[in-house]
Length: 90
Image (cartoon, rainbow, N blue to C red; front, side, top):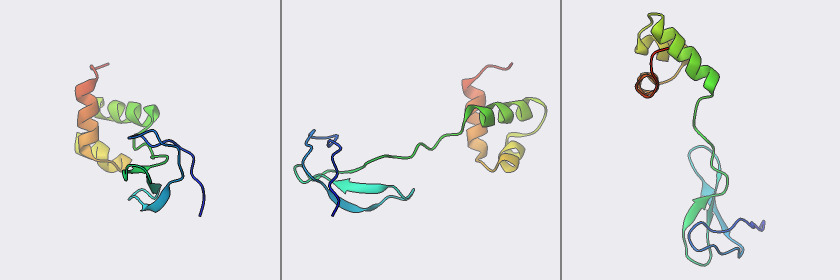
């Protein structure tokens, strides 16, 4: 069994922790021996880079529908619409 030294986000304990499987993205889940909370050691960020966002916005403002942009870039159309709401038109 590996020793894991990252502190618990709940109690701050650095005592050895127990491995408790993996989450849906494949990262290791850990259970604190002190307080029993389960957490992920190094969670993966699930976000698109700025280049992809800029390309999606450019495609949308050039006349492609949000659904069309989503299909071409293999992403949800909701992502495109949320980015449109957050930014002003260039």
